Image (cartoon, rainbow, N blue to C red; front, side):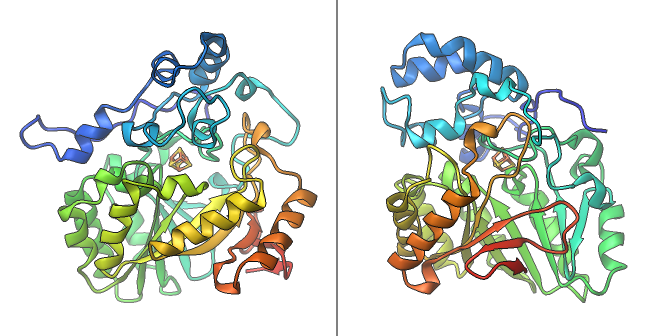
Length: 350
Ligand code: SF4
């Protein structure tokens, strides 16, 4: 059952300062309240009541390294807009719902979302390094559907029993919020299922918390029978700036396939120059564009929506500016559809 209880209490397990990896220490230092956020960026306190209203629904979480890439004193900074709670999140609008992509209906086993042929999603954790205000799982009931909280067996049994599955997608929350010990163990269990070929990891951590890309992560990611693919979620070119650039270069040097999936967001990246630079900046670091998503119509996120007509116009302009391999596919996820629905330039299913 979906509840409207605020998320944000999940955190990585820590074992003490001497044994805690640096990235977990950085995660623990993340900003967790709107008042501190406004103070740190030199923004007026007039925004505080609205920010606190949004925070009550979905708690604030912003790592220091991400905050450092925001422009102080700019309330319209595109990185700040992605992470700062706002009063608009309390607005109830028709068509904006708690589970717009039908995750609950597609739950096939604890933590397994099986919508499409050949691949399935494994929800690994509810924890994230950042709480993106447009998140389509901001109300997801992780306590009920998170296999990481007990054991993987029911999910692994389901995957092993479906030989048509060739790819498992680790999702969340953010799967890289789990420890490397846990992830390595899970990757090994999945690699032992003979019909699987690929392990895809959807994550925002290398972008928002680059400390996460350390030797321990690179070691297990570079090993194993399965092909490992990282799908990053970056929406603005400044998210690829230092220190994220160094982290992505390390991933590329380790031979990991890097793709980027962005969401088209009003006030963040809904202009041609930003979209062009997003693809270019990613490619300089070895990241290929994958999808440009229309917003999932999640309750509290309407202020991020870009109308379809505007999205089409931006997309055509992007096509005119970039070589084909740098143009992501403009798509929308529709609940119950057998694949992402392509919106342009060749509408149809994928
Ligand atoms: S990292 Fe992903 S799952 Fe986590 S809040 Fe952001 S969009 Fe949602």
